[in-house]
Image (cartoon, rainbow, N blue to C red; front, top):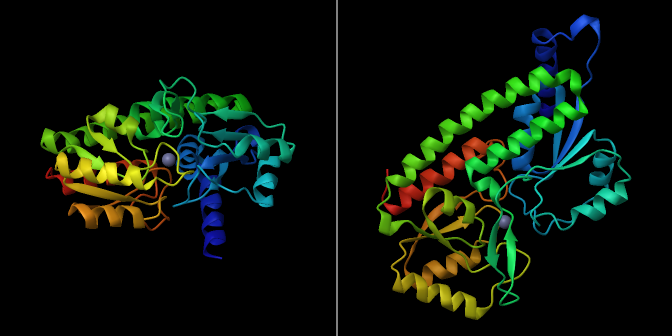
Length: 302
Ligand SMILES: [Zn+2]
């Protein structure tokens, strides 16, 4: 109920400030995004012209999602579908086909320099790391792709989408500086982090930190006892000061590693999904800021 009344209020407000040109009514177009992070970027670029729904919601894992009949309906009714790509949403192509949608499916990571990681399940082979949003420079590419796709499906909104994207990209530049400052405040030899799954590779490459994870770049397989023993050895040898929980992963593994190594639990990171609206990472910008601050706090930065 609360949600409905807020939507109505927002709608009324939008009608007051953005009256459609030449008396024509501009109905809001519907967009679907695979994750809460991508939905937030779409919301920032789409503004009042776009209603966006995330398939995989707050605090949920996009690697192993099970679509619902409602998801197929949402996709069928959407003007455009935004997905991360880079192998994140293995469950999505079937869902799109099943929905029968004619809407374009836009891969927002198009043009991002993809990172390859060793494939732990198939030694000698490599897999693509899908977590490109963890680099703000790459998120800016996502935003440009979203802007271009919205202009293509809704040409009358072009000026608005371009202005929104420009303003948001400027905010991301500020955010990038802020994250760099936070990470630079951590003594170099302490910029080492353990997380459950390997979701911070792009962050590490962009901001100069190393991340080690018992699970690979997906959460679809459990780490073996050997993997966990290797991590525990590494933490002790390299004197890694802190391990981190993730909002999309089972906390028990990290809690076990913390117990066996004496490493501190440095708080909860938001890796693949935003927090609930009242949480500390309910937007992409808040998520990146929160994670950088947690790193700095746990590792002796400011
Ligand atoms: Zn992930």
